[in-house]
Length: 129
Image (cartoon, rainbow, N blue to C red; front, side, top):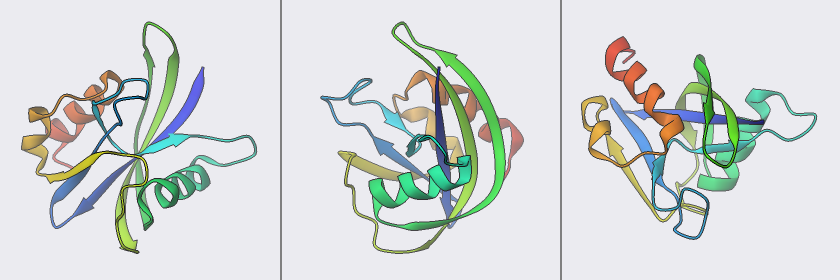
């Protein structure tokens, strides 16, 4: 099982959404940015590194939101999600092909990777922000 982290980056009441490149596994689907935890990293260290690599920005982790396990046909992931603020840096898409800032109520309008569906449901029902 692969352990991954994901950032729910919030700015002005909107959530950052990123579209995966078509040539990648789960290509052209939307996701919360993040990635694999490397050996020796804490979850928080991995999240800071992944966001810097993928988006070129620094974040501040507010709190852990939820963790879940999702089984795809080809692999299984354990996802740890964190509510985050954008601290500094110029947002640049180094991995993703598109991005959007959406209100929580608009998140369901995108075609998401399946592992993010429970996170979206949580955000909608919890009214976290």
